[in-house]
Image (cartoon, rainbow, N blue to C red; front, side, top):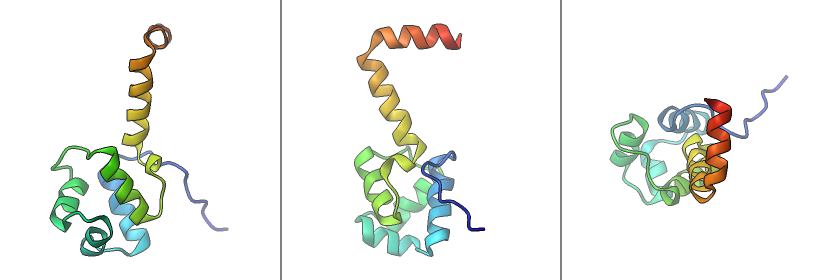
Length: 99
């Protein structure tokens, strides 16, 4: 029975990118070429030595690795954060529910 491909990653960005690179057989240099980012910068992202990049950069990485940008947990957290910032009443309801 073949494993189902996950719609979303539950791991942090670095391990997710590293796993996708291994799954697709892409090297840092090849990923750099596909994303117009440096291989060194990508290596720093994977190993957690740089902050999570912008959604635009995450989108380029996602496209090069054959996933949607929201595959990355960090993109989904940003979407939620933006929605919460736009909806103060939702923040209050969510906080009461979680507290």
